Image 1: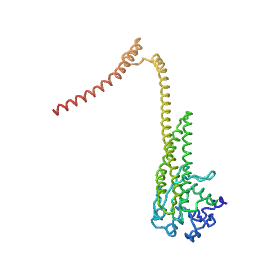
Image 2: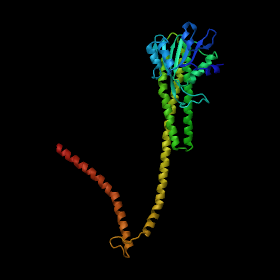
Image 3: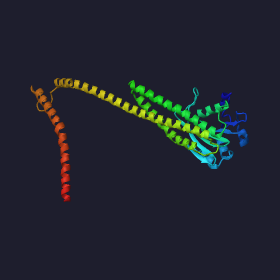
Image 4: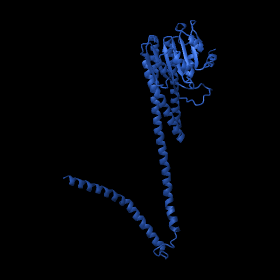
Length: 363
């Protein structure tokens, strides 16, 4: 039954679902007409909308009974996690994992993507919004549990459960990132240090940075939420939020450890690549040393002195060419050994002379 209701979500423009707590302890789904007819005395109502749908935007602005500034904040593109206190209500922005269910084809999604959920929570009603092309498994799981009679029936309980589900799915994402780094470490230990490994390590580090960028302000938002004095936020809900906040802090610590492991892995990969490069250069040097004498001998005995200047077309041509080669080699060695040094010393001496002349001028 729960699965059928979940599949029926989003049948009306802009409305993913609307759930009303009944006196019998369950929940019933409402259409737009039911949402329009709702009053606080009917029971607690949770409305989940598509933030970028024109119908949902028009309802939030004109028919939801919200302050224009609140409506603007709910529909704004700004999605950094935060909590704003408005009288006895709260405007909450959190980030959840946008990950499809197994077998669900959603092109363009990224497993490690954290997408925003905007929440307006007051004593008798919750309005949550997410973009049309996003899918938050955390809210789907929470709705299924509520349809099965196991979900919260109050504003404080729902707020705590939303934060819990979002944090649980973030924990699953952190576990995936950690497992990915472990696999990369295994690849490096197996001497698989190709360009694809470098790209995989860089992608892993970027994913960690992307996730942590939103989890740090989300930690602050949960801390602010658990300390709020809204009348509907019960002590039990605050205790629950405190536990969730501590859990998120542990996830952040795990992310820091994963990022450090990825950095160390990148350094080790650079060392392995440098070692491979040095080994290749050493092999080339050995080959050069082996081939150089053979090349010299082949060139020496195979040279043709005919036609060379200085009258080398005589019986002593080979001898004179050998002397010329030897003299050239000695001169080259002297230039390399002393010419560069003379140049360096000459520059130093010139600098010293310039300094002495400057000192004399000042005196």
